[in-house]
Length: 369
Length: 117
Image (cartoon, rainbow over all chains, first blue to last red; front, top):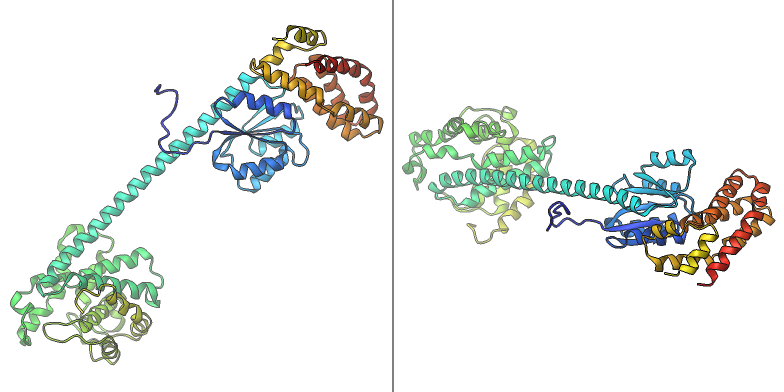
């Protein structure tokens, strides 16, 4: 194949039809004869029929050859009409005319015609001028589609990197949870519940979807500090002594420190959320939580949300130290302050979102429960 | 190639060479165009419009004939129709009509030649 003859169009659909709009049959026959060796031809005897054909065959039309003086819908009216229909010069229009009236010509140019060709036509000139423009438009189109293709690849790569990040965070968090005999689904559910509470209730008002996604991902790492807690304490079947409990409580501060120490995490846009959540997910709305005894809205809403998600998930699943409660029991215990202590706004949102939270557990019936 | 036909057309003021160029040497197409010309009714309609004082209709008909004769390189006729079209465009019916004394014999002559195809 001669490489300079045809640009490689790949799978791109390139139009190869010329639409001829002219009331004079002889003209249509002559123009058709000029192009029929390499183009398909569509003929219209006035602008009205031209519009119909244009709309019907839009993606196949490479160029329009347009007469000015026609009955029903003339050339200028045709141009006005297709502009109203959204034509923006994406298909080149050539005015084929004996018109010497400059006001008509300037109106036509103002409406976006590519070029005018005088009648009676000189075939090789018409052919050359139309071919050049059609090739230019095709090259432009194929270039644009290549840019779009590359943009898609870049987006795809970016998405894979984000997925990988998320995967690493989940793997790390699951590894930590695994030590306390938690499954990967706990981590996933904390993510899902957090996202649900922020996305579907008043709590997330004013947050972008990206922010909510960031908070949900950060929630995965809430217990990351447990990596610093000895197995003997972490997996002790019986009640912890007060010394042991003091050590257990340090997983919050240790979690915060851990996240600070990993530069790649520190630079993430969601670092603030991850850090707050790891440090504060055991704070209580009444100020009786740990490590800092923050009270009420001193605790950022994302930390409050993850705290509730963690309590809810712990209640409805079995733990070494407790049986699994039913959903209704868990809801009651959270609402009456038997387990944790949450603010009124969070409890109101919990009421709204709880049925959907419950549904998250039936999606993976084979796990836990 | 129908030399006799081309010769007669040339004698009636037609640039056969230019006409054949316009159809890119496609003689079959050229003959088809001539047949269309011979079957065309615009000329009768033009005469009617002129006699009835319908300037706008006359303009449209004259304009069509100008286009047709231009495409077929019937140079002498084309120039006459061009002049007539401009008169009629400007609303000058009588000047347009008076050109018919030159147009009609030439038009009939060519139509006779073409009718032999």
